[in-house]
Image 1: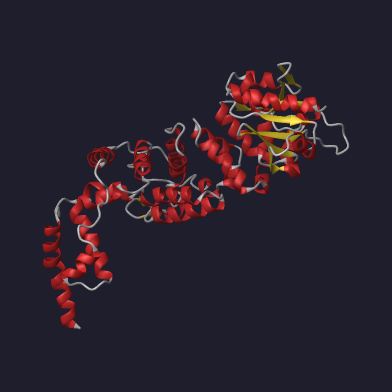
Image 2 (image 1 turned 30 degrees about the horizontal axis):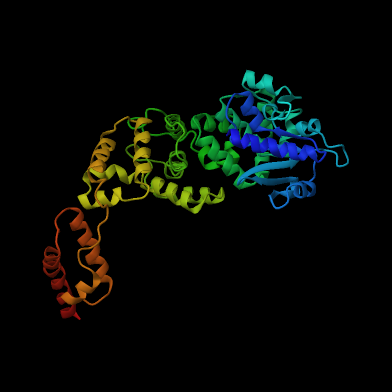
Length: 436
């Protein structure tokens, strides 16, 4: 990290040697004040994009050149270098003008690395001490400039452990609908940071309290007030259950936390009262809804498929003690099994607290973890032809059942497999031929 800071200081020196002013800005300065090691160093300068390119020939990449931002690459490390922000096109570019255009006071600090001096024009250090998220200037103006800042306020409150200052919080509530103007990819990135942090439940709570939830995740907002059978869910309605699940998580994986958030998303639409409250098919519907939600938010195909798999299978896992050995081993072979098991555990802890099935699965999983989960069939297609079969759907059926028998330890050699095939499938083949 020291090396990265030195390289960033070198960029500032180079810009200054060409007659431009330059400073560290934003989160890296906030982290320095909080005595944290910055992950990245952003630089703001009076130089224009064309001038930055000339000063660092062959070392720049465009990431937002239309907005005055380039990446400068030094020693294979990228540094974001941006032209000072300004409301007035013909104004003299300065750090004071730039700072006034930034979002929150804690991000409005600048640092002069040569003189080793922090420049605080907006009370950022005071707000860091007070642990407050406060907009620079008029909150409504800052949010109009970039509606994503509505969610960023929540993200900083969650990740830093700060509270949102009253006027800023009120402005978020009044302008929550503006979040619909922000790009879905940027919203997704903020949600990932919120929910994979140390306090994902606080993130959900703040999104709800600010009114942002109904615009970003309306399906989750609709979980509120959906009653559940008290015998299984003494904690309350579906939203209360989901919130409690997130409270049990600390810095979870993306797949696990979104599986927890969405696992009961199908309950409002499947609510019915028979002899008790039921949600028949909510897992299947929930998987379909989750797929649509994650597509809408532009999640990667891999993450979307894994989260949807967890939602779709979260009820099936409860049938584990009744499963055949082969079925269990197939369950263990699923790429998302560990997330599904963790989801089941948290689901139980946040409701009836019965971990019997989780303990059973954890024990069985440890037993078979070192074994090949899904073996190859003992007999190849060629060997089935030699026995007397014609290639076709029968091969798939034989191989599926053969693997089940292998997983259960009932077939251990080719000789056993050949006898089993002859005894169980040749008769079926002859019967089909006779009917034909």
